[in-house]
Image: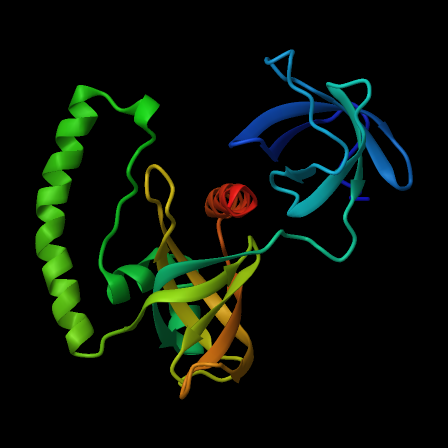
Length: 254
C-alpha cells in the first residue's frame, strides 16, 4: 500500500461503469495491510459499482479492484498486484522519430521544444462544456493558421523528418505502448512520439518513449517496438487512462 495514502485523505478516482467513465472523489476511511475502505462521493444514488470493478487512483499510477460494495457508496478496494496500468489494443496512427540523448539533455527543462521541432506546434481542443463564443472564434482562427503548419509537416514527412505508422495495431497503457514499426529501433533508443486518441476532443499526446523491447512482427519486415513513456505529464496520463477505459467498454459491448 502506498505510504502516501493515509486515513482521512481524499483521492480522485476513475472507473468504468456501463457505457461511461465515472470520475469521483473518495474519502479514505480505513487502511489495512491489504486494502482501503473508501467512501465515494457519487451523486447518482441509484448507482452501484459491483465487486470486480477496477478503480484507478489519479496520480497514484496504480489500479485497485473493488472487493466489497454491499454498503455502496462505501467500498473496500484492493491493490491489483503486478498490474500498475490496464492495457488495451486498438488501431491508431503514430508519428515517431529517434532523438539523441544529447537532444534530450539539451531540452530537459523544456521538453515541449523537442516535439515542436519535430512535429510542429500543436494545440488541444477544449472540452465542449468549456467552449464560449470567443473561444470558438479563437479556435477557428487557430485552425486556419494550423493549416499552413500541417502542409509544412506533410512536406517534412515526405523528406523523412519523422516516420508515420498509419492505422497500426497498438497496445497502450498509462505507462507505455507497443506498436508496429520498420526495424529501425534498438533497445535503449529514445523516441519522440505523437498520437491522437479517439476521444470527443481528440487530444494529441506528445511524449518521449524509451525502447525496452523489439521483437519480430507477424507482418513481414516489421517489428513490434515496445516503449515505456518518459516524463509523461500526469494530465496526459489521465487522458490515456480515460481512453483505455473507454476502449475496454467498447470491446466488452462488442
